[in-house]
Image 1 (cartoon, rainbow over the protein chains, first blue to last red):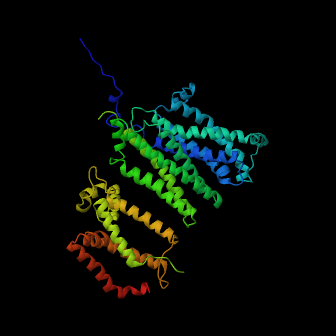
Image 2 (image 1 turned 180 degrees about the vertical axis):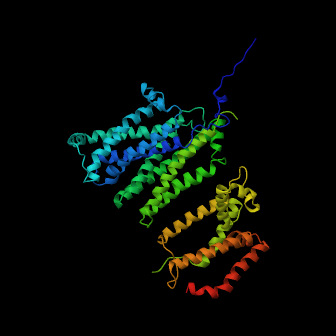
Image 3 (image 1 turned 45 degrees about the vertical axis):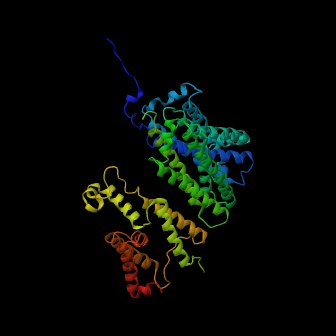
Amino acid sequence: MIEEVIVSGRSNPEIDPFLHVWGWEIPFYLFIGGLVAGILFFSALFTIRGKEEEFPTAVKLAPMMTPILLGLGLFSLLLDLSHKLYFWQLYTNIRWESPMSWGAWTLMIIYPLTIIWSAIWLKDVFPKWDWKFQWIDEGLEIIRHYKKALAWSLMILSIILGMYTGILLSAFNARPFWNTAILGPLFLTSGLSAGAALIMLMSKASKEKRLFARIDLMLIGTELFLIIHLFMGFLAGTNVHIEAAKLFLGGEFTISFWIFVVFGGLIFPAILEILELQKVKIPHYISAMLVLFGSLALRFIVVDAGQASRWLY
Amino acid sequence: MKTKYMNPYLAGVLLGLVLLSAFYFSGRGLGASGAVKSVVVTAVETVASDHASNSEYYSKYTGEGKNPLNSWLVYEILGVIVGGFLSGALAGRLKLKVEHSPKITSNKRLMLAGIGGILFGFGSQLGRGCTSGSALTGMAVLSLAGFVTMMAIFGTAFALAYFFRKNWI
């Protein structure tokens, strides 16, 4: 008697014809992760360059949001887990080849650092703040002496955090649309751009706003370059990759991607920022909000499109 | 205060060129009320989908796999908002305000505009199109209905302007 048993993950529910196991939680977290990485990067960068007083929003105020934002992001990740009580098992080993492991450990280190980083600036932002306990004040005073070292580690960790949100997807080689090395740099750039936009949104000093508008413009340019190369890479690839690109070139994600991400989230805010830098009077929060919205939309569309792209047709 | 507006004759010619390029690039003419209609149909379908599928008017645009918001006119109007915003910014007119004659209050202006808008919405659905979709685009393709719509809209406005002119001058 010959028995043949075909074992394939494809016969599991919610795998074919489209994967639909990831709802809003993952793209929301990826957006938050990128945004936090962007804020921390600029805060660390301008601390290292000794410009705390010149750019107070970027260095001191914006990072205050990061523990709250990261908390929200991690909570949404937890919501996505089927076995919520076993999340700690990620911390029972280190796997260099797994982006999930990289992310879990980076978050483990970066989260307490965001709290410490916010705490050392708290008295600068709120002068009347009282820590109640002498030892907290003393402890923070000691940490302040090492703030440049802390800034360096935050800058490096923020790049890893921003990059890993993209690598996490590109490591899925079963989903052709995610399986491209460009997603890492693309998500990092988009996260930095979102961070710059949030700083612009919160800043009251026109010098700071103008600097971040210029930084954001450069990042938008880089993002457009990466998006073009993303599609060039797909179109020069195998048939499944060409099919994956077609989802965006006439397929179901064409309008949402090109109109809401590329035009509404990159090109139009870039035009507004150029006009603002030319001293045309435009409320600066409009371009900042558009960039943030575009960055959020990019995560949602990439996560959805990746689940819709597949190997077998 | 002098506001920067374009010469209306020049703007008219440019609008004609916009219409021409719309035909060239998308194969469709311009429209405005159609986008509002899509939004209304979507709203009705969301809150009362039974009513939308039973109504002869709404059911034309709804149903399995049909999304009324996924239409050329909706994206065109999004573009109009972006273009209007940029043009306002370039002319230095980007300010939140109600434009009205000094003789009437902002509230009166908003109320009259609301009533006028409702009447125009009704009219555009009875006439199967508004100034853009029916008159402008219709005349561009030499449709008789386009000319009739244009004459009816502007003729009525001209005839009735006498009674409402106090709200403006």
